[in-house]
Image (cartoon, rainbow, N blue to C red):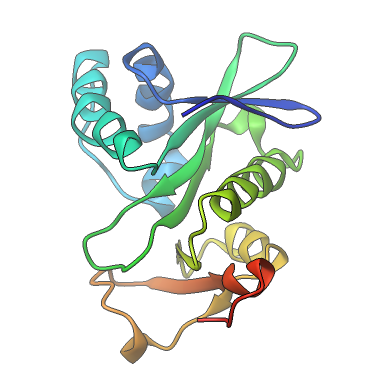
Length: 176
């Protein structure tokens, strides 16, 4: 996958070189609180994680990106598509370090990912958010994701709100 650019951001497909970013992100107190502990404590573990999850998914057109400001070398977070075994389409995932929060960067990055998903002709996308993560819930609502009833999906995670967004209507097809 190619890199994506927005007005302020550059999104680069995750590679082993981004392991230090993931180490910081996965051990950030807010990430641990709202997403959970992935148990990754070293750069080497994060490199293995990228090699076993992000890189193979890219072959299928499902890409998670490292995000930074266009005029900076500082990585601020990740945003992209993830494929969960319990969803029939990818889900939008994002996480930002404190330096990248509250600036509208997650919204900007997510819009770039949604545009890419349209190009790839995904009929819909999923998203998951911790019930207590009000800022992330609001972002997903702003991006036109809608809450899905618990019986309408197979997400096994507790305290998680599952949301979906149809992309098919934007492609001239019937919404899912």
